Length: 299
Image (cartoon, rainbow, N blue to C red; front, top):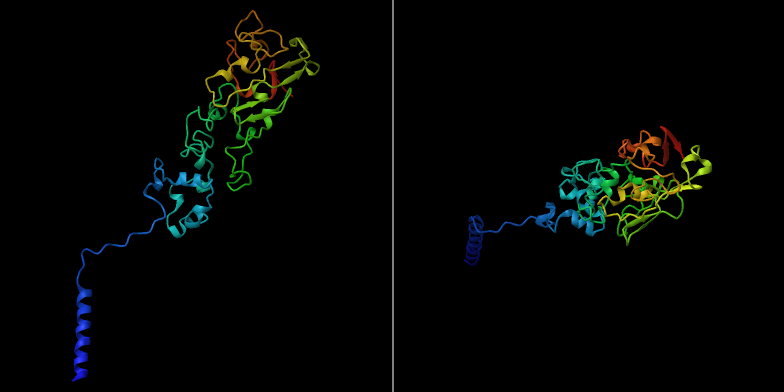
């Protein structure tokens, strides 16, 4: 009898369990999917945008690679970075952090590392004036002022410095008259650069000694403020003019831009400047060479 009673109890318990499991429970809360990122992760205007998170980690992409794979194809996150970062190198492309994200050939600011596009910003400044909007000289390559990395992970590229190091070379230091080419981060200014007037040409080395009034021709050696782009530093007298009215360097015979009775520049610098004093061939101006009487002289 006791065994029969025990069996009934067991059957009742099993029945209750089965009934409770078989009932539809419409109010059960679904388990939320797990995410390491907040909702604004793909919104550039959000404080949680992934680009801002990368910046907070000093642009070290290894944190991204931990979940999205070393080649950014998805990894354990199963979300590929290459869906948006479609250029060669993916997130490691130059214009991901600075430059135009939509233009693979525009890799210098604007946009700067903070997302700024104003020329008044020190991270933007005169980049466009030197690289894309230089109306009086040829393009100034990035390598003239910076050591350009060949790859994202190159030593010295991503480090703890507050901004890109300015290390002048090439055109900036050609035919220096004096001083050391420098960039002052506090004043946001470069000095002693050839391209802003720190040049010297000796009379003894010239075929055209009649053009000299002193032993040397030297420029004004201006000290431009990087984020002053109002045209001050593109005027002739800014780099090599004696005065507002005489565009010729110190030690050069007096001349003029468009006065046919006062040695206009076009008389000697043919093919470089026209009779109105406007540059007609940018490749022959600020190129580290003397262009006179249609002859290019290396110095």
